[in-house]
Structures are given as structure tokens and as C-alpha cells.
Length: 184
Length: 264
Image (cartoon, rainbow over all chains, first blue to last red; front, side, top):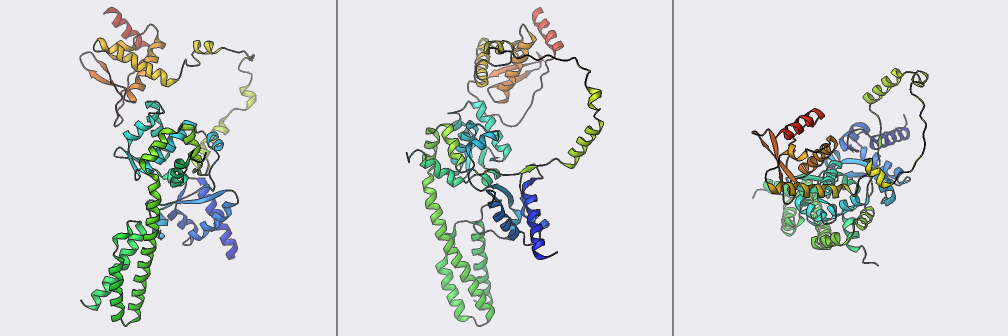
């Protein structure tokens, strides 16, 4: 097989691995990609990312812990997945089964957690959401966010989950929130 | 200090810088100025190519730390805009709809395709092959005549196809009823759900299960009465853990309980 054909087949394989959900949660670990695509899997992912750009998609890498200069082992442990390249239209998100209330509550949770250093007492967040939603619904929503991976819960504290890291530009969210309504 | 020890110290400088860069921790914990002075001294004493390379690597690592320090300050100063109080005030002042619109400006959903598993496919194939032909299945049921009629919301409520008000209002209203009922003293589960109709009892049990699950009321088992005492809370409490209490309310059980109560 020529080098070009080999690369092309590896890009196809990478696209299949990333797009077709095999486990309960979407995405593939770096080490799985390395096993399937070889040592230079990051180069293949880079080419795939350029290809996906044509369809408004991108390869998103979620690191398990905050790293400023990721190394090979960080990539191996990271979660690779395909996301929209640009923000979604609200109509598309609503069509996908979300309600406005749920999206609003998620925005509140993520921005509050982000502003308080990444972790918030569950009770505090419940109190805040209960100003706009009935208590029983707040509880259900938080459970749902945790189940879907948008939030993590540990020792009665909520933090930002893997799915939020993949789907939401948290700093942009906070910035948009602060500037919302101020531009007229 | 021997030159070998000095070399080890330079190696330690490199590994410390690498660790800080990789973990993204506070880069100002590294004393860059002191390390550079040390490297200068090391360079003046070194003679081999290996030592020069080591010195260069350490200098390069330190320069990356300095670069990271700049970025770190930028990030931290940027974070100042996300003052928790300002964010909280904004969250409180905006409607859920506004918050949803803000979220969508920063939301890039995951794109994935779900496929049937091999086991699922085998099950589906088995079902398909065992499915009798259509001609064997048709004709067994009488033909139904469908007509379209309109119903008022009152009719839907009467037929129990729609609720009057929202479910949350029902839960709140029910919580009030439980609190009112317990004002006269201890109230037992079966006494509370006892009603003239089985349907009404099931509805009460259903609503009560909601209140228990979400911390509005508690249940305490009374072995003497072989029944649960309902304890309504003044305010909702945090439910920790996941203890389940299964209370069966079959029609026979309901008859027996209602008759017992009737006798008393």
C-alpha cells in the first residue's frame, strides 16, 4: 500500500472511531487511537480535523486534568471526540430534546462553578436555581446534568464534567454572560 | 560542591520546569533569577559538550517557564472579569430563556452516530425470522372505524388525560395536604392513602412517593402498627444516599386495609 493510500485509510478509520459511538459515552481515548492508528495518531487526527472543518465539525481533545503543555502521555489519557466547529443554533439544540429551562439552568450551573474556582456546594447551587425553578425540578435537573456528564459530583460538591469540557467554551460562556444586555 | 552534584542540580531544574509546565501550576514558584545565576556559574565551569547541552536545555526550560508566567498572568487577569458576585448577579437577573441563549453562544455539541451492537443485531434478526407473515397476522382483529372528534380541556381532565395545573403545583399542593393532615397528630401511611376509590389511593401513594424521594416528607416504620408514620418536613431536606421503601398497594391489599379501617 502506498504511503498516500495508507494515510487515507487511517483518516477513514479515525473518522469511524471518533464518530461512531462504541461505549456509553461518546469519544475515544488517545491510547485507543494509538493502538488503532499507530504511533503518529496525532498527525492523523490533525488531518482529520482539517477534513471535518469542511462540514462544520472539529476534533475536540479533552484532557483528564489541566495541562498547559500536554505531552504524549497526556494525549494518551485524553478523550477525543467530534464536536460542532461553531456554536450551535438554539433551535437545533431545542430540537435535540432540550428545553429552554434546562439550557438556562445548565448555563447558570456552569458559569457559577467556573466563577468559583471549579467547585460549588450542591446546596448553594440548588438554592440559586430554586429562585427560578421548583425545588423538585432543580433536583431532577442536577441529577440529569450529572448523568449526562455535564457536571461531576464529589463529596456534595459539583464541578464541571467531561461533557461540558468537550461541548462548552466555559470562559466564553462567562464572558458572554457578563456582556449580555450591556451592548444594548 | 562537586561538579557531578552541580550537574544533577541542573537536571533537577529541567525536571522541575517540565513538571510546572505540564501541570499548569503556578509558574512563579520557580525562582528563575536564582536558577539563571546558577546556570551561568555552571556554564563557566563546564567543558564537555554534554554539559553545554544540559545547560542549554535548562535555559530553554526556564525560558518556557517565563513565557508561561506571562500567559499565566494574562489568564489570571482575564479571570478577574469573572468575579463570582458579578456572575451570580447576572445569573439571578437574567431569565432562563436569556441564559439559554447565552449558553448556545458557547455550545458546540458532540456529534456522534449510534449503532446497534452485534448482540442487539442478533436479537433483532431472531425476532424478524420468527415473525409470522403479514397475511397470517392480518384479519384476526375486527376492523376499527376511526372518527375524529374534538374534546374540551375539561373533558380531558375528567377522562384523566390531562392535569389541571402543572405537576409541580400538584406536588406543592399535596405537600400542603400532608402537612395539614399531620397537624392533628401522628398520621400513618395507610390511613393517609385510604380513599373511597382505589384510583384515588394509588394517586395519593404515587404523589407521596415523590415527596419522600425528594425530601419533602419522611417515613418512619412503626413495628407495633406494622405501618409507616408520615413525617412532613417544614422545609425540604437534602436526601442523601438512595434508600428505597417498597409499599405494595395491590387491589386486594387496598380492600383489606380499607375494611380494617372501616371496622375500627
